[in-house]
Length: 139
Image 1: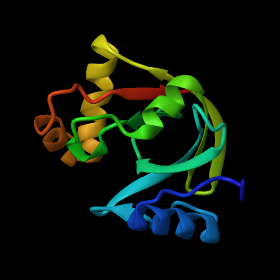
Image 2 (image 1 turned 120 degrees about the vertical axis):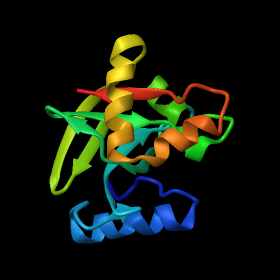
Image 3 (image 1 turned 45 degrees about the vertical axis):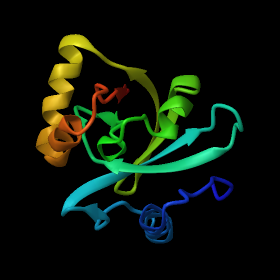
Image 4 (image 1 turned 30 degrees about the horizontal axis):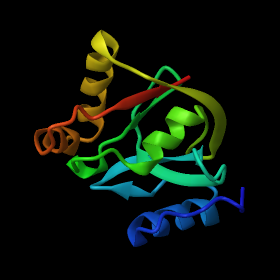
């Protein structure tokens, strides 16, 4: 996957480079919380793109939270996943191919609780934006 593109954001690119060079997400954290590395496919370009996000996992399923730090708009990767739901997930040394599905209702409520438990800043991000932060379950 060396042809995948890195984030233009320095600290995100550095995280990704660390994961790729060590072969594991172990030890790469944000606010002392673990992350996983998602590889998505660009909606328009078709290029692979690395997206490191907070680790929210339950029974082998993962959650992608499109928080963008509580910004008023969704992150660009949100549209890539909507268009191309096949996503590669690296958690530690384990790499799996999963399919993303946007969630709502009771399922969203359940996963949102897990997301906030995994990364409490998500609750603050939601307060900072008028949009409901979208989320995808990958299974």
